[in-house]
Structures are given as structure tokens and as C-alpha cells.
Amino acid sequence: RTRIAALYADMEQLGGTELTVAGWVRSIRDMKNFGFVTLNDGSCFKDLQVVVNRERLGDETYEGIVSQNVGAALIVRGTLELTPDRPQPFELQAETVTVEGASAPDYPMQKKRQTREFLRTQQHLRSRTNLFRAVFRVRSVAAFAIHRFFQERGFLYVNTPIITASDAEGAGEMFRVTTIDPANPPLTENGKVDYSKDFFGKPTNLTVSGQLQAENFAMSFGDVYTFGPTFRAENSNTRRHAAEFWMVEPEMAFCDLEGEMDVSEEMLKFVITYVMEHCPDELDFFNKWVDKGLKERLQHVATSDFARVSYTDAVKILEDAQNSGTMFEYPVSWGVDLQTEHERFLTEKHFKRPTFVTDYPRDIKAFYMRLNDDGKTVAAADCLVPGIGEIIGGSQREERLDVLERRIQELGMDPEQYKYYLDLRRYGGCHHAGFGLGFERLVMYLTGVDNIRDVLPHPRTVGNADF
Ligand code: 4AD
Ligand code: MG
Image (tube, rainbow, N blue to C red; front, side):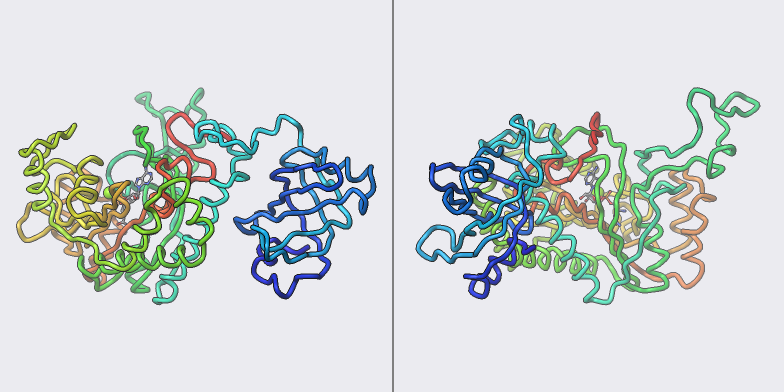
């Protein structure tokens, strides 16, 4: 079987040869004496036009083919004919056609355009549409580009656990993991659920971030990264939040906040350039049907510097905007967490490019971020991009044992739970930094698709966990 991608890659070589292609019908046109079947086999964005000839195939076979429905699985043996004068560069003149699997007439993925909302109800079939084939190809290529970026720079790929007993972000938005039967839980003497009888002998949850374990590895391998599933029970039903998403988390020993931002910026540019090079058909499709400015914007982002601004200055910019009439749903003042609307104002209206906002107030950031000399802010850097807002959250980590212990105490966290984490500061601790890239947000950015539900193969969001 030859894949359609190989036909496009090697058409000069393959022109005139006989070969077999297997794929699914996208459309069929019956012109009485001959017909056109458009096939796609998933190997590339483009389709293959198959020509079926009544005389050559015989009446019965011919009728059997042109009466197939969209979605049918066919195996076609035929001769590849180059057609330089037509819109498509070649077609396959069918010698034999086998209907491997017919498709019922109520096949939901018809040629007409369907709404994204409808397609979300068809998670098992939607990857056969142009839009989703393009999205998931970009997703795959971007994942490869990320590995390549870090591997080429000597980073170690580490798999951090999915089930954990600690809350890496201290935000409490976790999915519990338990084998206890809620209808019949073991109870302690004072009537509480007895987690010492649970599978792990204590309460556990799905990880919200692999950072704490990645830090362990950074203290032995220097530069490491994770790339894995992450879970958050955030009750926010937005375009950019999922309950299960993938995060890329590099962690670098002997690295400060500037170095961390440099690596984030370089990585984003690398992935954008890589995807533009390796998914030209997909990007053309997005540029035409999803977001008209996409290619130009990506090109620009890949080749120009990101903006960098402190939280304090960013708040001044937003306050100035507020004073000159911009209406925010959530008013801004120093100390508040930036909302999506503020992030988008900064990147879309003010800086008009990806922007790092640094040195946030410590009270709105996680416990592990390094306290700045002002005692009020921490060495954090969020990367915001137009259309989405925060795509990366990063920081320099608190490497000073006493400062970190004090912070854990202040926040009422259980030091016993962070014993291992604190040990890293006892045995050869060093300054280090890292970040977390929300992989789906990156895919949204690369495709112009504006809803996280449409870049996850099987999205899990509040109220949705089908299939
Ligand atoms: O900013 P966050 O919460 O940072 C961390 O988890 C750090 N431990 C990362 C690190 O320094 N190693 O999350 C990082 C990124 C966000 O910028 C966002 O892109 C993405 O993860 N993200 C989500 N993506 C989809 N759905 C959600 N519910 C997300 N929550 C965070
Ligand atoms: Mg964040």
C-alpha cells in the first residue's frame, strides 16, 4: 500500500506506475461512463482523486463503487497518471476497487460545513474532517518539534508521576484518586473517612504539574523537561481551560529568570518555524478558513523579539487605559491577578506581540517562586500571546531553604508533605528556573482555533467526558 503523502512527495518517480492506495471516501461524482472518487488516507492533508471507468471495471463493479456513501473504506489498485494541466497534479486510474467497509447513509461527516458545536458531539468521527485533520496533524508535529528542541539542547526527558500526594501549585484544584467505595467508606473512630485504608495509605490526586519532581531531576541532570498529561479540577468553563491537558515543563539548574525567558522565547519560535515548515497545507487551510492573519502573524512572531514588562509597569499601562476610557469587567490595581481581558489588552492592544509579564506580587503566585529583594514580588514570568492570553507560566524557584520554609509555614502548608522538595535545598541546592507551557494553548496559537475543546482529541471539560 502506498500512502497518499508519498504520492505527493514522489510524483515524478511514481507517475505511470501501478500502485495500491487505501483510504476513506470524501466525495463521489458519477458522470455515467466514468466517476471521480476523492480518497483520503490521513497521511497528509491533501486528497487523492481516483478515476473509475465503467468500461474498464464492468457495469456491476462500477455501479457498486459510485453507489458508495461518503466515509466508505476502499482499497484501490491502479495507475498513477500525472495531470499537470489540471488543478490536481495527478489522479489514480482504477484497475480494481475493493469496498473494504461500506458507510451507512446517515454518516454524520458530510461534505457540507458543520458547526464546531455539532462536531464536538462527534468526537469519534470529527478527525475525518479537514479542520480536525489539520489540527491534529499540527498537534503531532508541534509535539515532535518540542522534543526536538529540548533534545538538541541536551535536555533530559523525564516522566513525572500522574498520581501524587502533593499539590504542586498549592491551589487545591485536584481530582482525587481513590479506591474507597463512597457508598461504604472505612471510617476512623471519629467518623471521618479513613484514608490510611485507601490504596496508597493516604489521600492522593492526579497531578496538577510535574514541576516538583522535575526539580529533583534538574538537581541531577541539570537541564530536564517533562511533557505529559496534567489535570485540574478548575470549575471554569472557558475557551482555554480543560480538566485534562498536556504540559511541557522544562527545569534548568543554574538558570535565572532571564535565562528562563530566553529559553521559552527560543522554544516558541522554534516550534512555530518548525510547524510552518512541516505543515504548509494545514497552515494554508487555517489561514483561509479559520484565521486570515495567521500565517503573517506566526511569521512575524518567529522573527521578532517578544516584549518584556514587569507586572508593576503592566498594571500602570492597564490603569492608564482604564483612565482613558477602556472598560474592563474586572478593574485593575496593583495586587490583583491579571484576567484574560487584561492579558489580551497588553498583547493585542498595547505591545501587539507576545509579552512576558514578570515579577508578580507574591500573594497571587505559587509558594515555590523566588522572593525578590523588595519582599513583595516574586521572580515569575508569564508569557502572554494575542488571542489567548497566558500560554506559559514560569519562574525562578526559591532555592534558599530558610525563605522557602518560612513561605510554606506562612501559607499553612504541611512541611512534612514537602520534605523531599526541601531536601533539594539541603543537599547541593542551586539557583534554578523553569516554566510550564500549556500545550493545547500552543496548538490554539498555531492554528488560530479559538476553543481548547477543538484542539484536544477527546476534550475533558466541566460536564464533559465522553468516550
Ligand atoms: O501557570 P501554571 O499553573 O504553572 C504551573 O503549573 C507551573 N508548575 C509550571 C512550571 O513552572 N513548571 O500552568 C502552566 C501553563 C499555563 O500557562 C497554561 O498555558 C496551561 O499551563 N494551563 C492550562 N491549559 C489548559 N487548561 C487548563 N486548565 C490550564 N491550566 C494551566
Ligand atoms: Mg499560570
